[in-house]
Length: 238
Ligand code: NAP
Image (cartoon, rainbow, N blue to C red; front, side):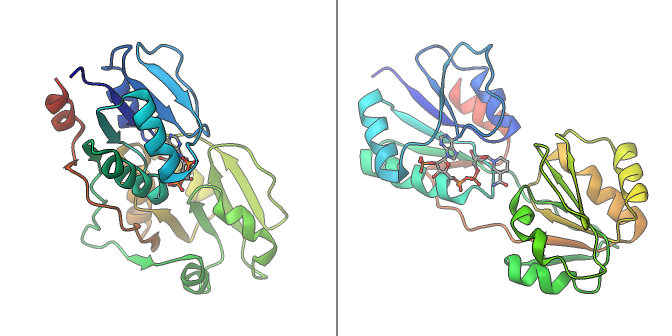
């Protein structure tokens, strides 16, 4: 049987996989980021309507291998992928980035959810949020005396207690140092994405002896094959 891959994208490495795929394969994006125009494979943008919708698509499109290369915090699509592949009877592979590990001298504090984060933030005045857009829903709840810096992919409206900075990685350590200094950051708030492109903020927090509040990674489903390295996955595909 001819192999036909559906690649669920969401991280930089997914695009690297997509660049190796021919026109019979499909690269699938949620539609919140940039859509590449220079690929040989087909590009599909938008959701499927849950695990059932994804399973229907897999059947209709004759997909024989599903690859989950979504972000480690995009747990819903990963759950849908594992369930849909199982329902259709095709293998599901996943590329899962290893989490960043604290180094000696780091002060990392893991929080499970937004409520725990708010509690952990109480002693601080000037957090830098690098969690995506979620903090935007809480701008009216910023305690008196706290001033947030929120970095997101797209420009968004802040308020008098929150400056929103639109920026996309990769980030350079010198720019990160300048940002921490300019905004007088006293705590960093981050997911543990494991991405090299966004790691320099952790180095700056380390240099300055600042705590890092890390949102716990969600549990992800088991898959038929899990790769922690892009090259290992590419080798298996070749
Ligand atoms: P999510 O909660 O796991 O997924 C929400 C819904 O978005 C899914 O149920 C699915 O809709 C659709 N979707 C997600 N990835 C898709 C893909 N590759 N192709 C087609 N549909 C997709 O994900 P999220 O956290 O909102 O993230 C959305 C996308 O941004 C993901 O692809 C993720 O990899 C990427 N991303 C997420 C983060 C993060 O921190 N969460 C960071 C960077 C990039 P249906 O149920 O309708 O199929």
